[in-house]
Image 1: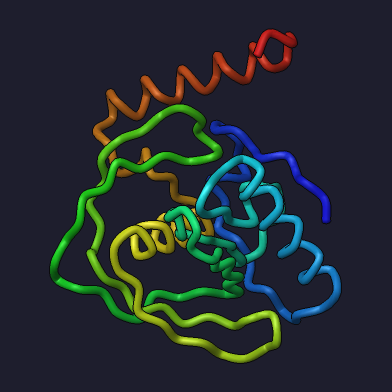
Image 2: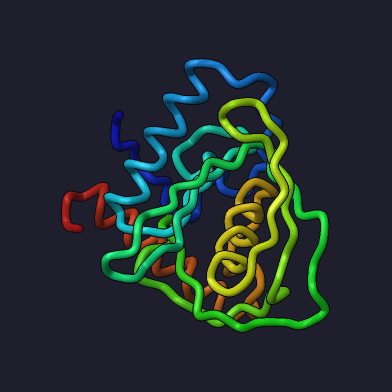
Length: 175
């Protein structure tokens, strides 16, 4: 497994709609392992392939946060939301591609998602709570959408300017 670099907003790849994964092969399995290692190391609870510069419809997540509870790493290939609740939930979201920035985002409280697993089997599951927020956030990445796209323009521009400064500082070796 290899830890991969996470793209920082603004980067055009983060605004690109990802292509479906055509087949599950060694390269896709390696990418899944790398993404899980990268996500855990960050640390985060979700990571989409475009965030590591791979424009494929694939994400990883693990929203288990309780001490002593077994991790539940998940790999979702070509995920699709097939049902949403009318009830909404607000969560203070962050993103590994927009470090140290958080904002409240409203999303459906429950979602039903179908995807293909690493064995090529179609899976369906209903998610709620943090899991629902996370899977919707990561699927947004596959559609070229960031959580800041849900914010008012002024707040979004302010965060984007902070990320541009962070990228300049990183390039100069100051971050």
